[in-house]
Image 1: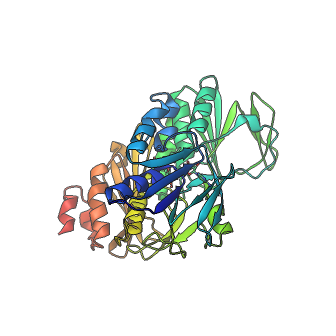
Image 2 (image 1 turned 30 degrees about the horizontal axis):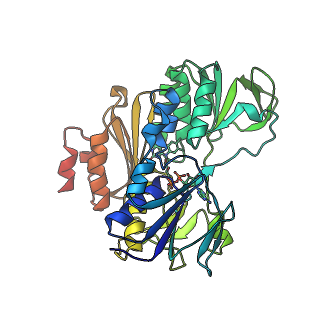
Image 3 (image 1 turned 30 degrees about the vertical axis):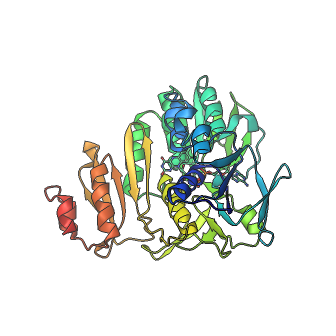
Length: 407
Ligand SMILES: Cc1cc2nc3c(=O)[nH]c(=O)nc-3n(C[C@H](O)[C@H](O)[C@H](O)COP(=O)(O)OP(=O)(O)OC[C@H]3O[C@@H](n4cnc5c(N)ncnc54)[C@H](O)[C@@H]3O)c2cc1C
């Protein structure tokens, strides 16, 4: 259906693409303008710390759509263009080159950027961050000649980089401020399992350590700790979390607190503005609380929900949060974001390399960490979405099919 309306989408990443595609699927016939800072078409980031970094695939394989496909979707794709101001009263966005684009409805899918180290550094050229294609290619090139890599931050991205560096024959030291790896997203049992896997490949893990400054010593950089000790590497890769790109929204007076606030229908407090993806702090009705997620699932599915809501089809975005990581040939999948739990139930034997940890809050599953056990995740997602009560004895017994707990 033809319409004289304009929808502007700021942020041409994963969420921006899925919103564009869904608007057309919903039959929206007006103008769509997709604005993105990067020079590439919208793409998926997970391979950047995995296959692309290891040299197994090239960046175009990550593209969600070619420029031709965007043209087919009748979308004006403005690449390499950054929105620098949002005028809610005048309903337009201003780009860095001075262009103004008016909108009837606006979707913000501006994502997030890496948190930077806030310690003195004399060696910026040897310090890498990883968010986009350019970062991944620059790091990949450096890994080709590096011998020792220091990873600052033992979270998902840091450990994927450590795994890729190992695959490229580098030795690795991981420095983690907490007392265990991936502490923000997995339970202690999984941290210990992955620490063992990385150590078995020769990686040194320094936990409970905080770098104090970076010097230009050694082969590339020297990471100095309080107390006087240090470690040298050809380069350091920093993975210490992300900051939502919510400044545009905040400057326009929208509520930003650990992300841009939206409700379960992806609406901001401005009736003409929606948001989706990493930038949002959203209400999840299933969990009954607010979340800020940094996952592929959220970027895609919240954007689809946002586009449907923008087309007038009310659809709450209400899913069990899910994410994954691949390290050293091992697949880790995560369900839920438990704030607390009463007991952890293990199903399967960690020594076999395939097992699942269920974190129970009372008699319900609050979170799941599965190692090489994707089938457990499929059933656990249904148990969690249905808020099904479970018997811990049956849950831990591999002789009891997980599916039988559904009934
Ligand atoms: C290396 C890496 C590996 C990952 N691996 C996994 C994984 O294994 N599993 C998983 O579940 N998730 C993974 N993720 C997370 C997942 O990729 C993100 O959650 C997802 O990309 C978020 O999509 P988004 O569209 O919200 O934001 P983004 O992908 O960040 O896209 C936002 C886009 O908006 C642009 N932009 C920002 N501000 C402006 C502006 N003012 N004007 C114009 N454009 C702007 C940005 O340049 C960017 O291109 C990974 C992320 C990274 C970086």
